[in-house]
Amino acid sequence: MHFLELVNRSYTGEVVSKDDWDMEHVVMPMMDIVEEFDLNRENGELLLHDREQARAYFEAGVEFLVRSGVYNQSTGRVIRFTREEILEAARGMPQAVTVGRGADAFTFEPRHPDSARLPGVVAGNPGCPMTEEQFRRTVMSWAKEPVVDMVTCGSIVEVDGFKVVRASPSEVIALRRELKYLNEICAKVGRPGIGRLAAESSVSEIGDLAAMAPGGFQPGDAHLIALNNELIITNDNLIRVANAIDTPVFNASLACVMVGGLAGGAPGAAVCMIASLLADSLVGRADYHLCHPIHIKYIATSTPECMWLSSAVCQAFDACAPAVVICDIYPKSGAGTVELLREVAANALAITVSGGHLEGVGSCDGLKPNCSGLEARLMGEVGKAAAAQGMTRAQAEPIIARLLDEYQHIFEKGNEGLPFEEVYGEDGEPRGFWLGMYEEVKSELIGLGLKL
Image (cartoon, rainbow, N blue to C red):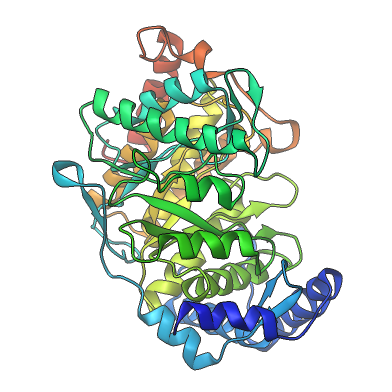
């Protein structure tokens, strides 16, 4: 389907207020869908294990999208799709996405549950607010990790001491700085061609447009095409899509569905996530998917409900319309805490054995720059080790449960940890106490059966 046909629908579709959209197109139809498809999450279940259930979730996602459509908040109108259009886009998703260039290129392919195919590892914390210095030092810390296959980054929120303002000259400058630093850092660590999920300092479409200038996006880079909660697109993001047409830049869909929000608990939120990613295959011309559930109370992706949702979404696409699905890891804890490492390990295991690829780590809920490359190293090591040894969902779930027991106390009280400069030295390496925690958790994981 021509992209402008979809854009045109956002000017001719039915007029709906935002409040009516939320209630009449999300809350009420989702309640019906969950009941009609008899969807539920068994109490305490951390992973989905049933392929027929996975199919049911996918079919429910398609049906939800047919009934509700997508809301263009910029025009106040609904974009409608037929079932045939949705399935055609879903089944036309790329089966190989090669990011980066030359010797540093990496190819993502759809994975299966319990697969021995190693997951790809995208290191970084998209959306985390950072100064320029914090940006440079944190990106350096994970770009140099051998386990990393693609890099991403936080958002520069001030340039030369001036606050970055949305859709203003400062946003353009921040975006140009981001790409300049990424170019310099990747070259410095000997990986000049590594793929980047970039333009994270782009608060509006202005920054994304600026990223196409010389020195910006490189062939094999990607940018985000996000849906807002729930199933909402804006002209801002449609312009980002148009900006990438006929370029070698990939579109990464992004949905951050709220578990416990408009779509209800984990089953409804999983349906909404599937529908959102399917929608982004159409309106966002997505090349691959990014799944980022948010717990309405605890935020973190390492909650039981969010890990189960990611597991269900990965398996739903595998069962019905294989695509590259990358799942975000945004733990509650920050750097310099042992709980962060346990959250990362549990979350990475859940995603890997469910058939997903890995992205993170958005430590401290991605809200503060209390992050480092060390937890990204562990994320990649855990995921690749689990796949290499052929770990199954049945084998992984008890390990995840054991780790959860060790960190779930932090959801109520928080555990923001330490900023980067307190866990890494001036030499760019982890400080002794932080490396010691990492070794401690690796030993725990080995004791639990992971061949690290």
